Image (cartoon, rainbow, N blue to C red):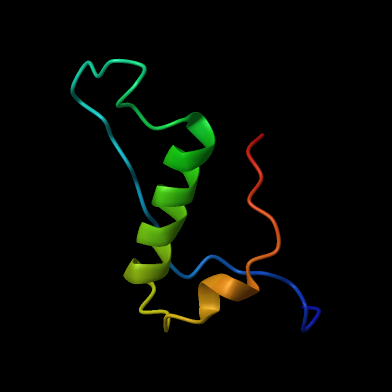
Length: 59
């Protein structure tokens, strides 16, 4: 495996079970960012690791 190959070390999920108004709900990008923050927390990542994330992609 190449030393630069990214690996998954944590998982995070954001679920909005309420029926929020458009003014109070998170945008899809902000929902993905929140899930990413939770994944970093789950992985036990230190606070500065998030600054090294270059891309958050959804397919």
